[in-house]
Length: 463
Length: 99
Image (cartoon, each protein chain N blue to C red):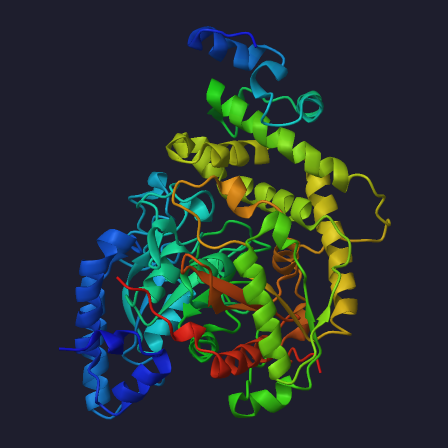
């Protein structure tokens, strides 16, 4: 019998035990399934469990490791994937009722890479309907943060963050177009990595916005995110936008390197848009960064209509991506009425307006290149509020502030969200570290140093 | 405020000036502007819109109009080409170090 503490160990700790044959891939897989059976009906983190596949993968991993063939740090490690990654032989519902019977007879590129690394797929995670919308707009029931089951886990990688937080898997794959990793990572108190646009192939992943979608990782700490990222990243012939940059973080020298970086931060209007406890936790986060030898300076974002540009680009691209859904008439099955309006209305945005947004984006790229010539990393709050009640109005959750989130996503910047405290209701708070394109090493090293002197990421919800 | 039966109200939604049904959701001026610039057709991508669909699409476009009016304010330089993908693939095989 595997103790529950083992299920909450970091991926790197589990990997050491598996490599030394002190932890059986079959046993840990069964232990996770037992916990999923017990916990998932309350959290709604998993949409589908892939039991047969997982058992087969666990048996193979155990056989290989016992024979002395160790594939690497993900060999025998159980994980979960947001239900927008295609997995051969299982439904891929995109969180939406019109796709409840969809089976894509292929594995997403990232799933193939994880399979080749010997990782074990436990199941597909719940997600917001077509990767957007309010808590209840999903085919599998609102996913809850394990810290308070009356509250939302965030979206759209809702189940991926909740599954990691609840100890239902070692790590999970998610995706972000605009806030879909940062938000659930913050609401669930886990570490979330959103890499640079193109760093991880999107082949076999639902398209919402071709020029803004990114695949990412949710895990217990920055090192775990780094381990998974290093295995799944890189050029893929099936994703023309995929890139192949060098990634060589040096965690043993991270403190020394970090002290030489120039750190900026965004001061949000917490009184107007956020929670006082989030403001307090962010100030405390800044204090930790000073303790780490840096001198954070306040930044002003280059002036651009980030949110209007992001909204227009996403609405135009999703209207095109989901044109078959409209044509088939199955759009009536979309739960969120506002989303239906967006998909239909998006069809009427003119090409000139779409191009105008893409041209403004060019100006943004130029201005951020200038900004990043003076600053190496930017700090901000992942969300300005903590997890809201399940029935909360979407507009009230995300109203105002955090303008940089639209900028980060338009510019394809890498970021990591790390736990940095709790509010009075004992809900987790997230701090994000943003870097220039392809600076994942700096971003993750900074997060690692933060996590080596704080213990927020080691806290567990009582379930 | 004038009250209508559900049936009459539904009919009004698609025929009457938008101020009758969307006041409070969006600014009336934005809505009127959006409607004058972009009427909601009966069919989109081969799909026949229901009355509710038309309301939802109108609501979205009215909000969108507000955003677009900001975007349209400035003139963009003729040579400013669209980005589409914000990442330069020239960075391939190079580390994205900032220092």
